[in-house]
Image (spheres, rainbow, N blue to C red):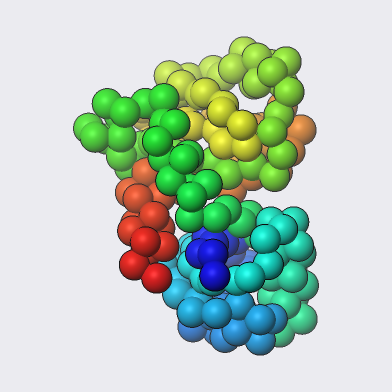
Length: 181
């Protein structure tokens, strides 16, 4: 049975969408996922499922989370092999080694048009560097995410699709957890 990685968008923020990770794992079991494990408190789960449609998994997980936990949020699902391919495609290998906390992999719902990527790159006001490969954006926040004007809201507006990001350390931990499952 394939291993999947599920990433929730905008959970466990100071003001809203609080979810305890053990509760989330129980919800995954209720909707038919197996061997669910969580990583950190920011909405990262690894699980097994015989369902191969990413869209179907995302829908089932979002509906289950809303029904059982009262939280309405997006899920972004990748297979373990898709996550490993995204890691291998990283256009910033030196930053991944030297400063992985400032390298973010943004998981996107859809692959944006090349023109949208160009528009977003033109809107970058700071020292951030961004490259998009398929449904993933790789961003180096040289001065830190908290100080950047390159927000998720701006990125989604310019790319025309929703996304959720994880720093490189978390991405590698998710890949390791998926491998161990």
